[in-house]
Image (spheres, one colour):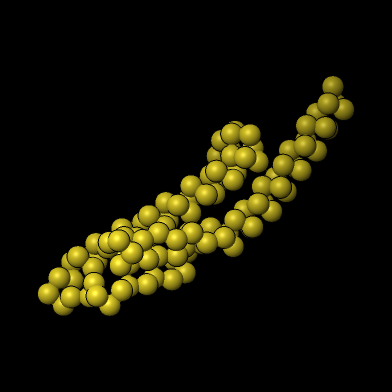
Length: 104
């Protein structure tokens, strides 16, 4: 019985190392999303950090700042969502779909 438990612990440690390595790799990946037909584009990494935000000058209108704000929010939120989905999908592949709390 102790030998079986030792194998399980060894496998768990190996899985944890693989998950940590995958998290590090995914943190370096970038995802992009846009809003307003590409007028605003946000790029986010796997760490949920906004890396860049591009705004087409044609969408900048001093009379309608609210629209620009909405487009920025939409692009950033979509990029963050894509980043989270990327992390969940890749972790799911590693864990065989097993949801491990606190991992992503």
